[in-house]
Image (cartoon, rainbow, N blue to C red; front, side, top):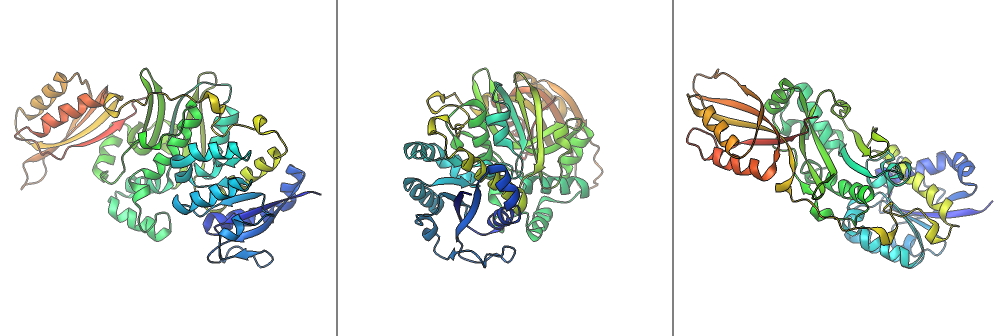
Length: 434
C-alpha cells in the first residue's frame, strides 16, 4: 500500500497529541484514507515524555525536517510567526503541503502564504488554528457552503472563559482566578494574548474571512480584554438576566462587516451563556439553515491533535486532485474574495451595560439620564443600590441601554464622567440583548 510521509516540527502539547493519534489510530486512519500515513521525520528541540518517538527519526534542528526530500506534508506546530513563517515558506517552495495549528500565522500572514501555496500547487490546512477540536472551519467551508453567512458569535478562548466562569461561580477576583489558571496550565506565564483578546481576535479574523469571502484582515478586528471585569459586574448582570462572556463577533451590517472581540452581556436563556470552563462554542447563522451551534474543547493535546490529524487526512485525500479542484482555503474561489468595508467601532450598534459610581444625592441620576437621552440613548433597565457604607457617600448606578451607536454612547459617557458628583471610572460592557 502506498505511504504518504509526514514531517512534524514541534513536539509540545499539540505535537505530542498529533503524534499519538497518528500512531494509536494508524489502522483506522488507513481505512479512511486508503494509504498509510507515515511519520518519517520529527523536528523537536526537546523530547515530550508523553510521546514515545524511539522508533522515529528525530532531529534537534527543525530545519532538517523542512529540507528532508522525503517529507511530503509538513506539520507546523511550533507557534509564533517569525520562525514559523520562514519554515512554512521554505517548505512550500520545496513543494510540500502544510498543516498548521498556528492561528497567529494564518491571521497575520495567511493572504501571502495562500498565494505562495497556489503558485507552488500545494495545500495549506489550518482547522486546528480555531477552536481546537471543534470543526468550525469545515462547517463554514463545507457544511454551510450553500448559505450566505449572516453572523458568527463565539467563545473562542478557553482561558478567558475559564476565568469568567470561576469569577461567576466563586465570586472571585480576576487576579486570583488568573493565578489559578496559570497554576493549572490554562494560562501562560504571560497571559496577555488570552486575557486581552488577541488570541480570540486571531481566530475571529480567520472565521470572518471564511464566512464572508474576504481577505484576512486581523488588524481590523476591534479587540478588548476581560481584565476590567469585576465580581460586582457579574452579579449585576445576573440580576438583569444576563451572563458576561468574552465573545468574538463577526456579522454583516448595512454598511459592511463588523469584527469585534470584547466582554459581552448575553441573555441567560441563550445557549452560549451555558458554555463554561475551558470549553469553546461558536454560533453560526446562515440565511438558509438559520442558527447553528458548535461546542467542544477548544484546546489540549488530543482535541487539537484530532483537528491536525483530520487536516492531514484531508490533504492526503486531495493530493491526487488537480489544484483547481481542491476545496479553497478561504471557502471561496481565490478570484472571488471581496474587500468588504469594515464597520468602524464607533458606528457599531449594540446594547450596553453601564456601571457608574456617583454621589448618593438628589438630582444625580436625573442628570445622568438626561445626558443619555440627549445622545439618543434609550434606557432599558436601571438598578440603583443603597449605600451601606458609613464612610462612603457613593452608590453604584447600573444602567442597561437599548441598541445604540457606539460613538453616541462614548460621547455621552464622556460628559457623564465630567459631572461633579460622578466618579470618572465608568464601566461599559457591550450587550447582546436577544
